[in-house]
Image (cartoon, rainbow over all chains, first blue to last red; front, side, top):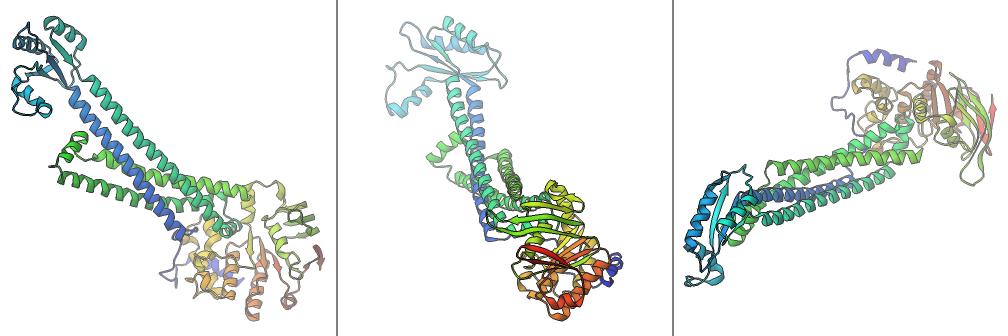
Amino acid sequence: MSTLEANDREAGRTERGLPANLRRDQPLVPVDTIAGRALMAVIAILTFLASLSAGAAVLAARASDQWRGAISNEMTIQVRPDSHRKIDDDVARAVMLASGLKEVESVRAVPKAESDKLLEPWLGTGLDLVELPVPRLIVLKLKSEAGPDLAGFGATLRREVPTATLDDHRLWVRRLSAMAGTIIASGFAIVLLVLTAAALAVAFATRGAMAGSRDSVEVLHFVGADDDFIAREFQSRFIRLGLRGGLFGGLAAIATIGVLGFLASRWSATPEAEQLQALFGAFEIGWTGYGAVILVALVVAVIAGLVSRFTVRHHLRMLA
Amino acid sequence: MVRFENVGLRYGMGPEVLKDINFSIEPRSFQYLTGPSGAGKTTLMRLILMALKPTRGLVNLFGQDVSRLDPDTLTAFRRRMGVVFQDFRLLDHLTVYENVALPLRVLGKEEASYRAEVVELLRWVGLGERMHAVPPVLSGGEKQRAAIARALISRPELLLADEPTGNVDPGLGRRLLRLFMELQSLGTAVVIATHDLNLMDIYDAPRLVLADGHLHVDA
């Protein structure tokens, strides 16, 4: 036959006369459909929410580290007034005992005036506190790698200075740790829920796309495509949608976190901002946070690809 | 190549639409499948394509009983067949070029390796200037030719064409028939489903005649 024989000769030749702008290798499953754009918007929104949750968890983890670091590097000795004892002597004795510990970096007895000032928010200013039994405080700064023998020191302190008590802030550390742990766990639970929602959305969208492409799938079968090929075509479509949705959602989350950080720094002079800063430190998620956001976006894309592949394979098995 | 023995088919609990079908298609043969509209020509083709399973009887393709085929073998058999659907079945979002290249693309071939071949075939069927177009803007005859080109591009061992000249003018119809005859001479078995008596008169070949669900061979 002239045509087919000519093809053999033609195959070896250059592409003479071939249109330069010929469209080739378009996805076999259409991507730019209304359903595809809607799914991409859903994925973007879910990624945005998941990324914010991940960012909040990272923020809480960083703040928690700061709190624990600040509190656990400090201990306080409280010396109560006793009418039978001279409080200044007790303070001096306690300072001397504390200074003898090799894990302690510095010891500072809080002056009485400073102790009195700590009571001003509750008792008001201008009061003469001489008659009040206000305890004296001694702040011990620990070396960063320190692990002092607290039980031993506490016993020595009680023996030497009966009016003194040692507070190592463990209770506070435990409470703050529990609170931070709850925030982090909640953040990850929300991320998991949102990822599950994304997987379900993709599964339903894939089923819809399969139903809409039933004829195309049949044609692909007739021209010799196997189930793997068809599943790959759908998977690549949904990975693309997932990546685009994840990119938009992740970028929106990063922008939101950036704007919140900027606003927090602008309002840092207000008492509310100071409170927030005391709780969360600077509103900054760091590279870990940005890494978490990017990871969430990538995981969403991977989930979109895997779920669509699984759904297509299941659908094709049903058709067989 | 294809052998049907006492094949019957019914949809659900309905009556049998095909009854006791017996025929065979030999390699390098040429035959018409004919009968009135609704006689079951397309259904019979779908049975050969393994898109339908018979409710009884034996269908043997390329020497194997199709009821025992695993999915990989089924795909391999389909790659040895070309099919022209009555309703064309072109993918609307792909260009004519991409539609025709589809059987080679699903084989995993590089686009550069088949580009010239696809363009040459498109020019031969008169679609050289329409390879950029998508099916929704093509006429019925152009879609028909694109569907035929897609069936031929992989040089199948068995070509099944369902009313392949139904939407083209008589001149092109004769030209396409000559193409099918050339294919047969190159080693492809050809089955053309048609009820166009004029077409069957151009080239005399055995006729598989379907009527009332039964098939007889008119040699």
